[in-house]
Image (cartoon, rainbow, N blue to C red; front, side, top):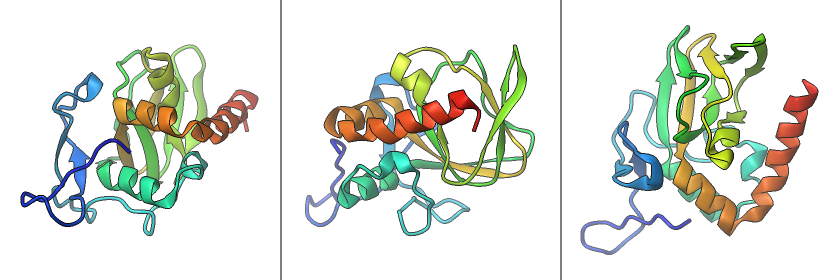
Length: 173
């Protein structure tokens, strides 16, 4: 992964970092030092269901991506994303369930732990194709668009499980 943060002295292991709420496209000002959260801090592969999307990554790279992800909890009834909005992040569902709705079709699916979404708008650089609504409290990790695209450039094998998931969605399974 291209993002590396070092301790102020320049020595030691990389510091965990998370995206700020005001992250902008292209990554300008998108990262700030990790803050404690009510859910326990940054994400790692030991406490989080890892979507198949990350299976192609070496463990060290996967752990770095997960450590850089921002953790956010959405309350029941809250929109995670809205159809037509700009896409800034890939979402990885850690806990809870969310309903997928389209203006032209109503409810069309559901996400749960280990699922990911938002990749279509990030890859196509278009607006969100659906609204995702929390059915219960949903905790997600958000990976900024620029980091997601850089990962695909550096690890193109990530595209294979992503394509499998997209095909499953098209077939309605």
